[in-house]
Amino acid sequence: MSATTNILVVGIGGQGVMTATEILAEAAIALGHDAKKTEVAGMAQRGGVVSSHLRFGQKVLSPQITPGTADVLLGFESAEAMRWQHMLRPGGITLMNTARLVPPVVELGLFDYPADPLGEIRKSGNKVVAFDATSIAQELGEIRLGNTVMLGAIADHLPFSAETLLACVLQRFQRKGEKLVELNRRAFAAGRAAVGEAEAALA
Image (tube, rainbow, N blue to C red; front, side, top):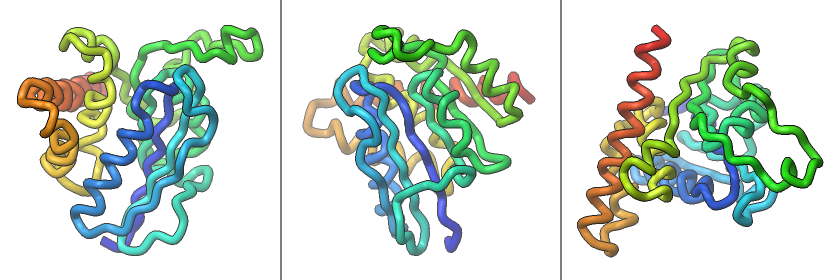
């Protein structure tokens, strides 16, 4: 595969943005791609805004995604998904958790939280698939599963199989016992199903 795939992952510190990017990179590398990713842009501590760039393909020289070239924007938080829309290429897609996690800069009064992030993205004309990853994780009994739900959400929007990505996700939890492996398997499947349903509704 000669083309380079550009994925931008954004959210709030503590949501697992960096871990998700690492797992996506591991899956690409396992299939023989050259992969480059950036470290954190912004504050990585819990509550700060976080973004991570991932580029993979036959040969990748720079991890930095230039504005207007991202194939997929994976938004762990709705306002962050809205804020990074300028990075998408024409025909690119946003996969967005509808949960609102207000960062400290808003609580401090430095910025206003947008009233309707999803509506704003739709107005821009970009394709957006929205679902509530946080509620899905809570229903499974563990808020931290939100990260795996989001990986399930992007699974069918990659140039390799969902099974390859799932294997990399589950490998992370192998040493922590079968119960956690099974929970993450369910979270991944739930994220994948949520995006499938949301896309069917848009069709």
